Amino acid sequence: MAGFIHDKLEIKFLILYIAARVIEPIPFDTVLDLAMCDEGVDYFDFSECLRDLVKTEHLTVSGDSMYSITEKGMRNSQICETSLPYSVRLRCDRNISECNRKLRRKNQVRASCEKRPNGTYTVRLSLNDDMGSLMDLKLMVVREDMADLLMERFRQAPEQTYNEIMNLLLDSPKPDEK
Image (cartoon, rainbow, N blue to C red; front, top):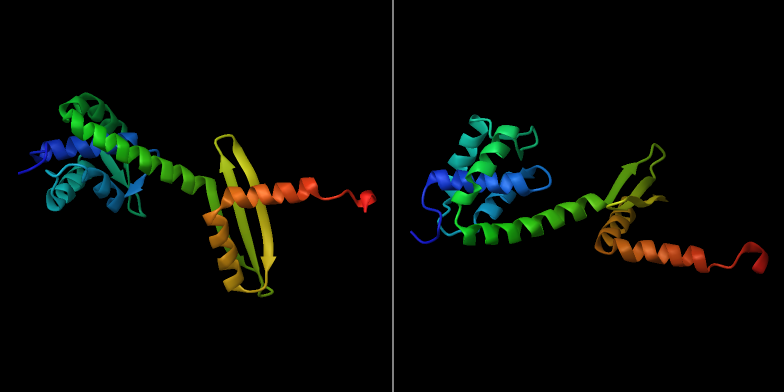
């Protein structure tokens, strides 16, 4: 078998290592993707190990199937992490770093749509950074396809949208300058 992970105990150590380092609960597929950083990890063994870690209360799984580490899991992860080969930890750390970056980004850029009783839609666009809210904008649109387009374009370039709004408001002439 190729890879540095050779048995189910090592797969459990790897899963705990991952769960201890992600910044929020993650779904099965994300845990799997992160664990596949070593060729020795097999899907079926992984699934069984993940299930076992939930049974032994090292991990919890929420109603919406998101996995997170428990205090017990955190303690055991800290004890066992050095049992993982260094090269596996390095690869895993790179992947976890990218995953955490995407999770942070998802939490910083939000776009939602709500139908109003009169048939129009309210689109809410918000942009946050580590300090808090940068922008929270609500717009009324008359059609759902317009709402979808606004949300998609905002998600693609939220900083550009923010900068353009700021520039528009800061560069506009004052009412008495017209």
